[in-house]
Image (cartoon, rainbow, N blue to C red; front, side, top):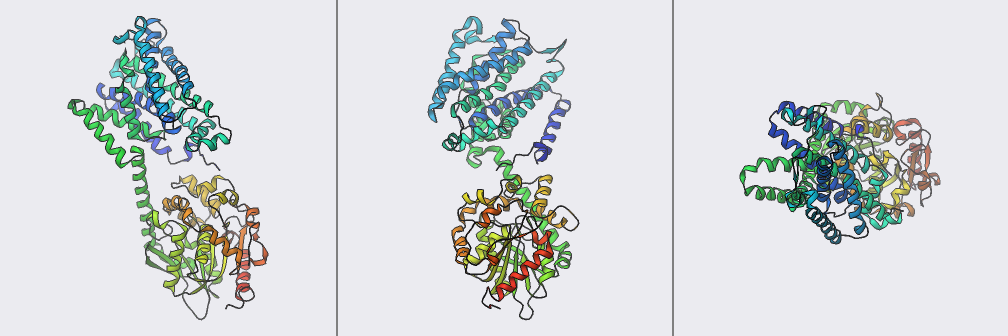
Length: 625
């Protein structure tokens, strides 16, 4: 099951465009040569750091010879451009090719090594290359290096003119090409193989991934732009020094990785800019410069082991939580009358251990049985407004917004966004309503809440009906059998939605956008994204076998009412489970009902559900009502 949308369909497009425009305009606003110099170095180091992260972060391969590949690029440029008179532009490209060849040679001894052995071998090989450079003094200049290397020019225009603006834009262009290369690589078949070996090596090998081939390709790919960056560095500073092999460069680039965060393209990029500017800003502090930089690195690693990228994600999570909570509170007051008119039920707020929960309740009256509706992921209680209208004359209809949904409060994701907590909230809602016996209907995520509520035996559930909810015994194993492997399924646990993703999810989870379904699409955008993400990560805390035993034992009448074209479900899996008291002996399909047949085919659904309720209250429930 894979969901890998192109960049232009994700939330990353706008920040990337803003950053690109800012970098394009930067030299026109800050004309000082010094500031441009710092930016050019940041571009170069960002290329080196992001490519090192390909092997270190994405592949989990502790290659400490990466900086040597950068130095190889520098010396390749120096030898070709100055000694042999090759075009500087071709010499820069040759730096990438030479670095790739050297990386392949480095890869051979470490193809089947792990951990500290990879570190030791790659450091030793980088020092071997350093000794070759030093000893080949007739060509490389030995310990003195090579100076006055050819500069870059386009026609008669030297890039060093006009405050080095030419170097600035060439460096920016190389960085953009590098990021595009890494982006496409990590999304490719090779990229998936690289990460599979990192996450579960033996499983990946069992699935046909060649460890040796993948490692060799990883190191080679990470060297191409690293060598090109080295060549560009030599052309810019016009110096090839053996210091490039030293611990100073290694420590600098490694600090960019640690500060930015590994395992992501953007983390090392941010780290490169942060460390470059911090180092330059502290240049006047003398020996305190390294001490302050080291302290900054320690603070970031201690408080945010994932680096600045993780810190930005945390800030993003806080901002998104504030956004969704603000929407909920505004709608809670401004649109209350409209919601009550839609359902025909009064709405009130109930304070629980998981925050304030919004309840819609048609209220007690006579001897009407209670009917509880539980909504699905990223929806709201008004999803059942048609059932409020259809069943209110015979039943006391109750529904509530799950935490982080509708107009309920957002809650602590660690404790509230899981099936067990949702079932406890349902118990609190029923207790507040004074309901001791209830029919329960759960849709999608609400179906699992209904199963958990029934299996807990804290409330007397007279009948259980579920829709879009395949019962599970072993999680996550059964999920691969119970659900169809589609992008829509992956979205159920995605924390942040772009507008296109929200629209796509709303269309498949409920109904295509229309005047009638618009409020459900707005509910998707309002939902606290953490509710989706944490709900999936907390599946293990639910006693799934208990739910399945309850169904198999047939303690209460049960109905399964699915749309025959539900895009999420594997209907064969649902039909093949063992049930002890299943209405009509099999799951019932509603034609063209999709994932929400109660909304898409209301008349057919209501008739079927009403028939089941009558069955549960008479024959199936032994005359319970």
